[in-house]
Figure (cartoon, protein in one colour):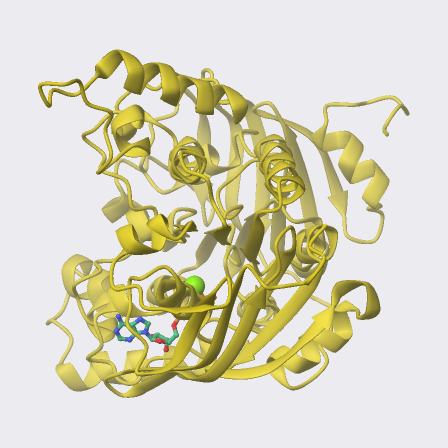
Length: 504
Ligand SMILES: Nc1ncnc2c1ncn2[C@@H]1O[C@H](COP(=O)(O)OP(=O)(O)OP(=O)(O)O)[C@@H](O)[C@H]1O
Ligand SMILES: [Mg+2]
């Protein structure tokens, strides 16, 4: 295909510092035409920063960018795009008030001779791209009305408007359903067949090993090496990434469960979930497993006072309760770490410490406000426990790496010391090392007497953390398993709505 094997793009000795952080420390990286090159590293390792250098958003302090044998300087994303380098952001960067079409062609709207926007052409072209992505919405729709997953598809659609040399996907699957993932992987394979170089960033090892030709590992801003995917394995890559192998076993210490902390009976929210009954005891972790859209998040939101059920009963610590608002839920000792942490969990301009102590400052109705010292003590404790990487508590949360932002939100709800802790997709976007720490932390919290609910779409995760697993399908509980009886096959069947033995 490429006879002289000239890279589509090469980075040499890239150094980039921010106040207090050496984000990149002499990193080399190249992408061949038609190659999927995975970029791997812990949260805060420098992956997004390297890609922003590549896409003209950051200027490197040192080092070179070489495209088709030529040294280039790219000082804006527009210049990078003109060179055929396109970055699909980890953080969505759409204008919510505009239509999907306007977002797809942002800055380059097709115009008529008088300079007016050519809406017909814009919408026709955009709809063609959305069709290619098998999206089930039209380009005329306002982005704010789209689900997060569909917004992600709009972000991806942007990359298909130009002849790309290199397309960078920065954690594109974090909010996609399995079906949408399949479409995305098809698109990536199409681009690859056309000779486009792909950079793929993800914390999902399964995706990396399915998609990539080569893997480059960063650690603490340093270059740790490049491997052929076919010649390596997860363990080797993990060791390069975090400096050790991972212990993925469960803590098998015998467990004693306490009294029932949460008892849910025939809870119904029409169209979302129906007749849902389950209970969680102190000391127990109950995993909710199912496909995106099975109703798990909606149940969690109901328990946190964000939705009103039309029928059914909720008992907390043996007493029937009405949970009218999140404030009421918090007062009853129920905490929810939401699925979409960026939107629901974090004030980006606020510093890390204040983000973490926010609900206590705002919602503790009894007693005086926390002192600065107490706030800092809480921050320090959870920074250490969750291995949050930030130069100082004063750093605004918005500039932390994606995964570290998530840890701040998790720390925030843990620091409330709830009796019932609900975590929705707790490790999405979190690197494998911290992921295993968070799993352990959830088990420890249960051992301390908390009742824990973990909602997850990742089977290894529910199998690792749960004492019991509730399998949901289309708003209904299909089956409940104890961890001793569950098998992967039976789980897959239950969440696919299959009751007889016909699973693929
Ligand atoms: N604009 C900025 N100002 C200050 N520090 C920054 C800025 N952007 C990134 N950093 C810091 O640089 C380091 C690398 O961050 P980066 O976002 O590149 O990590 P990442 O590898 O993409 O992590 P993740 O897997 O969590 O997305 C982090 O310590 C981060 O806090
Ligand atoms: Mg990142």
